[in-house]
Length: 156
Image (cartoon, rainbow, N blue to C red; front, top):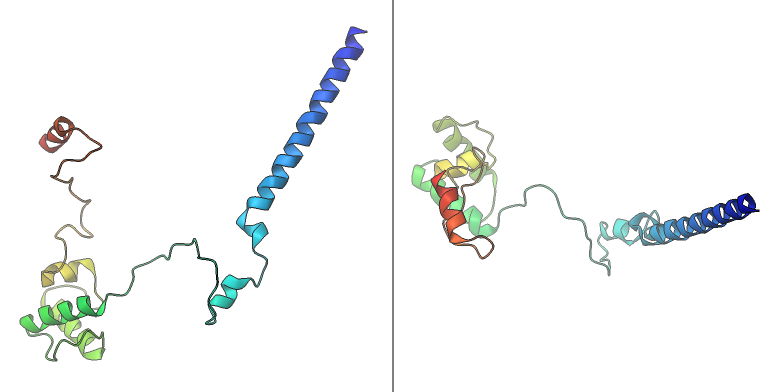
């Protein structure tokens, strides 16, 4: 009798476990983004000019284009060097690209005509460690770490 009771208990437990896992996996499928978005959904249509009512959760990868103010700043720095002859207009045009190529070639950089960390640093507009080394620790006190921990970190 004990063996039958034990087998019945194991069977009942197994069935409850299987039923619970089945319900759990169904709820995961319902929450997954793949189950929510069928092929040809609004996100594909939004790339053709229509706006989607839902915000995209995806983060755009890659470097964003510089703002017109930043382009003007680059043009001014290139004109001080004599590589750019036009008036700063905030537009990345062919003359700006040619000016950057001249600047890069004159300073021993790869003359691509594209802004990079080393070109910005040579222009005086970038960080001296950009693209070369990891960022240095901040000198300001943080609310997350004590001042003694920061002092010992700076001394290393």
